[in-house]
Length: 329
Image (cartoon, rainbow, N blue to C red):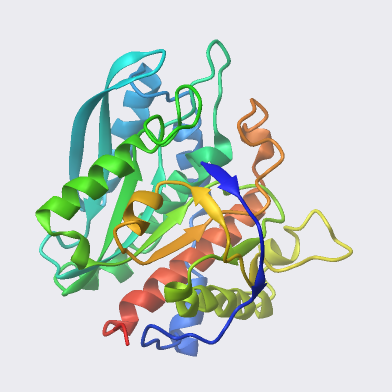
């Protein structure tokens, strides 16, 4: 991804969706669901060099597909070929997993599973984006029973693992976002985009003390739900949350009550944003200091923070689905 940040200001009170808070019973029962050993194992399986077209890329793709099919998700591959700088003609494969392939509407959670080409350097891309991929697989496993109710509902859940997010040479419109550009264009032609309630994109997650901001006015109310859920989570006194900060003197929340209105971050949400799809972009600002360096490896991962974010995203997902009748005003 590429970024150019200019100004920020406090969030306004724009409410584009009907929202129901999770009941205390639902919140606490969902919050106590966890499988941290699975989360770490998923990171381990994905945390290998996985440049498009390599054996590592194939291995990770097969792991993601098998993991989701074992959990009884419907999985399809969106395949295409494209010529890229340096490496030439490559095959790309977006992974699309759905609970109910016949649903009328979808909440989409997404990330990218390829790693950046860096010549002879072995770039692992822990936060970029092994951890987000692992978080989505972990969500599918931890919430398996809870999500079963949404296999036959008009509103359901979709997971997308985009291919080819990274540029092979210099970041340019034609050398980046290969998978998301192709899929957004395909779904526009097919008339599928109107079925997307919202696309949440996870990127650069896993380092300690991340700070997130709202970027888009039409999803402000849903971003505010992340703040609210984190606040409720913090009040539970979970050790992972209390001990995750490297700044013990002044620990801070992850989700900030501020908007970056003039943000221009090019990422896999961009082709969908341009076509009018509502977006929640969960990416830390500033980026981790080791972004696009070989230091983005397992040592960069703070698993307490990762588990905290995984819990918040799971709570958000269930709140959205359980609201059920979410509508644009």
